[in-house]
Image 1 (cartoon, rainbow, N blue to C red):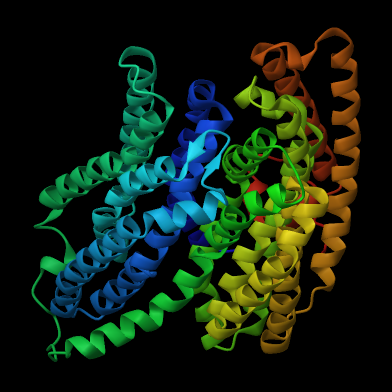
Image 2: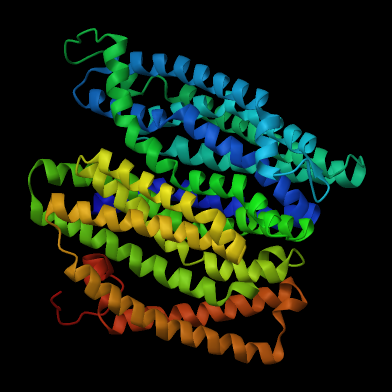
Length: 544
């Protein structure tokens, strides 16, 4: 894998990782203040917002980034500037339309999510208020995303990374402070507190926009797009420009919608299915918030690595495929998939085994038994999320965007077909099984298409995956034994401090065992290649 790919991955990942980690940590105090009822209400609002945001942006910012990069490369800065100006109006328009639709239809979405007029004390009016408060962010966020895309088109990743972190920090500070003040000082109640917690998305977006405008003012005179053309420009009609941009945007929007769509299917079907088979309202709300809000935050960290790989993989795969360099193409696919397996598989195995203490580290006192069960089953699905993201990116790199879309649609159909039945049979675990089935079908189809259109052989990947799985089994056994031994002296259920101690000791020893085994088996060298030379002692070269 080229150093260029890794550098791009690092830059795109850093801001995302910091943002995701902050987005995970803030749930500790938030869950302590609002519990599962507040978490369920929060998720009801955010699920609608996420879908509408994906539709409003429609992959447009990423597509504009690609468009700007293309025309800057040939010195046609005027076309880049025209596209950016037109894009601002498009994002403002789509953002406002999305806001207006979500605001007006909020009562209908609230009924769909709650399944009843009142669920465990949460009414349709309560959910409507929360949905409407978060909808305001749709006016600002698409514009912010476009400006980030414009900077990225100039190979300037700093503004995006910094604005992501600032946006998240401002959002979290406003969210936690407003929730605390409303519930403990002003006595405004749970619903109002959660409403302002979702409104924090708008406040955070304003913070992110301010950062981008500061960068814009500082760099306005040095941006390539501000320079005079070095080639004679042909005034491209706006219609033609937008057709090109939307051709780029299609794959980005469909792949980006995968996780939100799966999550939204659960949002509108889970409560109805649980209540249909006679489950208690309180138990249903507890399961709903743990399954859809609290646990996913813990398993999404490994997925962001795969997302970054996906974004940086597309141009490199495209270049190799266009140049008909099958040897390099196969090597890029091989090393990317192997690296995902090397990093994500042990993470999800360890998280599944340590589900009890890991959940308690973040959400001690918040439906702990439900959380342990859901996290144990949910963790392995993170590997499927990661593989799907990279799978779709490879198909896009092979110029088979339609096949990536077909792969996603097939998986969603499977999820829809199985979800209600499996939830009625196995509750929260049933939802996870339906999600896993959907992603598995998508992956099988996607990998079959990659093999057909690139001639890629999975033999080496399968061989390495078997070895990685064996190492993960040894690591998992060690982690399980360590957790059992620690359990004799420390009960992780007695408090967050005990849970942190058990988790940290188990992770440290388990991780050290896995790295040592991967090193001794030469797996690290074979997958990471020359990048490890500076850290590892010299040894005889081993063939694949």
